[in-house]
Length: 135
Image (cartoon, rainbow, N blue to C red):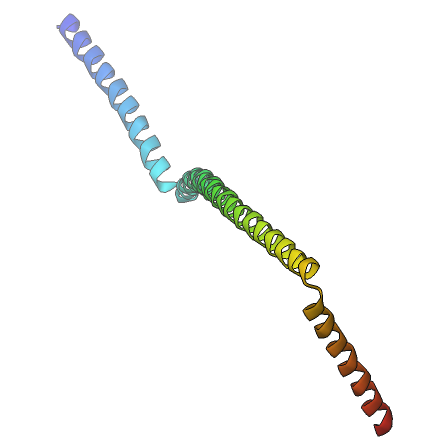
């Protein structure tokens, strides 16, 4: 009977040891759950990390969009500059042609232009005389 009792004792001791191990693990889990300060700190650290990742992602996206918009604006500006340059060149060509034609007309027939110039001079002289009398 002593052999039979020793086996039961050993089995009981093994059961007690396993129960103690399980109880220790349970106590550790309960202690971790009860440590609100540590849990809040971990939660705050995780939230901070998520915010940093979101901020970095948003910053990269915004920079990409800004670069794309800047490229579009540069393209549009270059296109408009080309159009304006072409218009300016055309207007300058027209102005040169008209000036050349007017100069040629004056060289061919200077009398009407001389009369206009003489009338302008006479008008200025009369205005100066009238202005001098008012003083």
